[in-house]
Length: 379
Image (tube, rainbow, N blue to C red; front, side):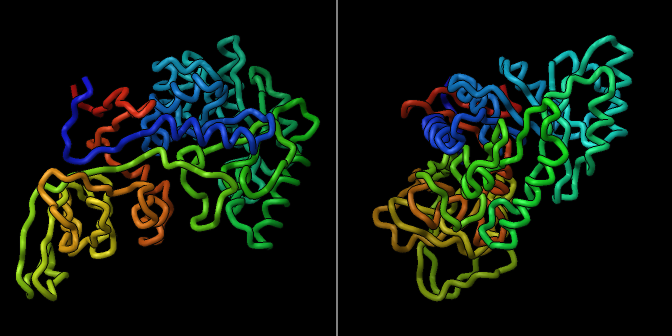
């Protein structure tokens, strides 16, 4: 059923996803692409995104944890699923059952995986994480690499690292990224392993680092790794968040609006109530900062964003009526783009898409038509 409550919703454009993927393929120059689909594909709906990417030929998928990987298997994803995060020993059986590739980020943890695999008479696939400057997860030396490679029960497929500042063109950051790559190659080269390091920033700003796989995350979904630093192709935003005008009021000068009475009308104005708020992922930080597009006119958020509703000034919108479509995040104009909105509140675009709440239905669009409506937690 493709009906959904037209209160607030997120449209997920699979044609835009395909466009971005094809552009990334050109930049990857023949390397395999690992699609980073953790956190519900950055809020876009991992099932719809991954099934489309599988149709396009993607062989590798990156998730945060075991359960995200299991979900993809249940949805019919057959390629390699790499979990970047930790899986505790109680769930090693499920790594095996669902064929999930585990990241081994330390000798100690690799030994736990090895002991389990030996006890079961199997080999567990792993990618070895190398810490080259992110100072998070990963081994630090060639000896640690050799120790892990010598462990029985492990099928060591690849080695990888994560860049800390590949989305920056500041000379010191470029140098740092180069040093990270050099350390990875020093530790992992000529070990019979596939190598991957380039994230979205690495793909678009650093050319060919000589690995075997590139990891595309935020650019798959059409957002900037480091807004407003330009990217070398025409990205298309996969997600558009929409709402509607639920009520209109004309108020006199001096009227105070929303919680805390933080906004006072300086003159008579018309305001609209938009049924989306911070429980939907539209952050309270947008209070008296954000803008929404209604009937082609940018409208300022006035007063504090509420849990379920936001108030905007629609005084300049001609012929406005209840039920009119509101563009909350969209590519319709710069001021409603995810990345511009993120810059208003000193964050990044993918924090906004990840934050779009599960009570917001995802309306999956393909070839300009609704393919599916995903209503999380509802029958």
